[in-house]
Each structure stands twice: as C-alpha cells, then as structure tokens.
Amino acid sequence: MTLLTDRIQILQGDLTEMDVDAIVNAANNDLILGAGVAGAIHRKGGDSIQRECNEIGSIPVGYAAITGGGNLKARYVIHAASMGLGGVRTTAKTLRTSTAHSLRLAREYNLKTIAFPAVGTGVSGFPMDDCAQIMLSEAAQHLKGETSVETIYFVLFDTTAREIFQGALNKLEKDASSGAASA
Image 1 (tube, helix red, strand yellow):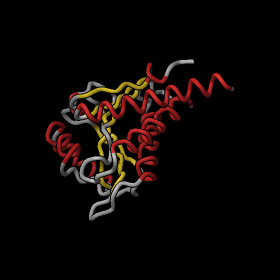
Image 2 (cartoon, one colour):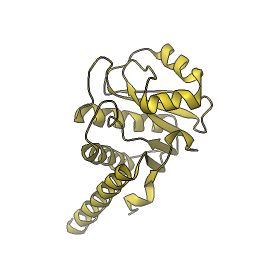
Image 3 (spheres, helix red, strand yellow):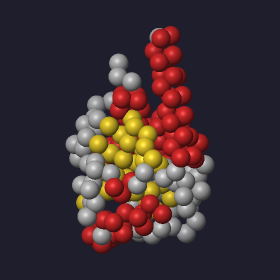
Image 4 (cartoon, helix red, strand yellow):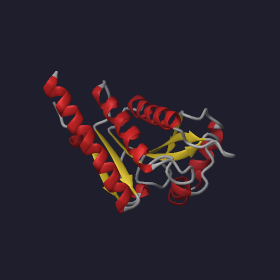
C-alpha cells in the first residue's frame, strides 16, 4: 500500500508558480476573480481566465469548473466554488463537495498533478484546522479510487498553515495505517 505522504505533498509557497497540470482557485460561485487566491491567479494568469469564467457563468456553490491556465505554468485552473458572492460563506459541506468536484474534474481531464490552496480560509474565514482535515480527507478518499491523479499538492501561503496541513496529513496517515493494521 502506498503511503498518503507519497501522493499528497504539503508545501509553502506561491500557488500561482506551481508547474502542475492544474491549480485550484478558491472561487465564488459566480466565478468572478476578485481578491485573495483568485486575484493572484487573475494577475499572473491574465484576462483569458476571467473571460473563460464569464463564458461558464454561475455554478452552484459546492461545485467546480475548469478553465485554461492562461499565462500560468499550470495548464488549467479548476475553480472550486466553496462560497457565493454577497455573504454566502464557505461551510464544511461546500468545502467538501467543491474539493471532491475539483478532483473529479482532474480525473475527467486525465490530469496527473493538481495543487490546492487552503480553500475558504481567506475572505470566507473558514477555520484552517477544519479546512485541512476536510480537504486532506477528500484527497485521500479520491486517491483510493480509480484516478489519473498521481500527486496532490497543498500549497500554503505561510508557515502556520503549512504546519496545520502537515499535522493533519500526519494524523490521517497514522489513522490509515492503524486502521489497516487492525483490519
């Protein structure tokens, strides 16, 4: 059995600099690239990403959509709509479903590598500990099934977030190995 830590990597850095098949945008359901991660993606990736988002239009909160990567190193941007514009905040359910939909899109597009930020923890104010547990659980669950995805990166902005995600991954790994040992 492959260890989760072989296929899930926790990094600190700039998501927009990742040379992967797709990066994930912490999106609103109207796919308007405003502040935070979305703003950084728009600045580095260019206007073509927003134009593609405009063509897609609104999607339900908890879903995801895919566009080209514009001028980014990543070929695609997957927009995980964990919140809505106008005060609809990220919830555990919308974070879980938008993460799962992002990974399904990666599989549908036969992508090998995907990089996520800590979705919902910026403008929406979702707790970092809960975000790490939910997103890593969804990633681990996805990797148990049939998928083209070989490596999932979580690219965190600061040391605190990286340490929280690394701790959550270590706990997930420990729980998985103790569960396998008792099975």
